[in-house]
Image 1 (tube, rainbow, N blue to C red):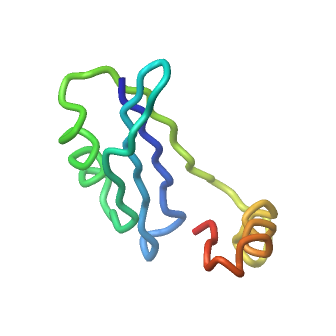
Image 2 (cartoon, rainbow, N blue to C red):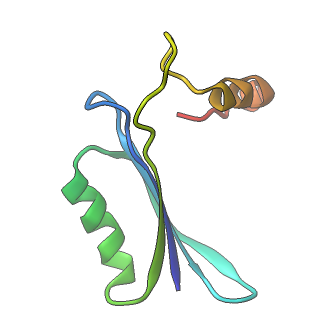
Length: 91
């Protein structure tokens, strides 16, 4: 079975990210990922290529409203602080 995570961009100037994992009961392996997708049709093309007609569970992160001036959720700010030394952040 395939597991797909999609992180949709907040605006047209940003890009969406996608990760595809294939897994069984005891194992999983990363198949492919991208962080530079701009169009919905490109997301579909990206995920349909490896999974073909196989079953897949898809999770989508699509925040619709962020009520603050920075446009960033509190969890993302905290992650940046925790992992800044490793040059890792939520985007």
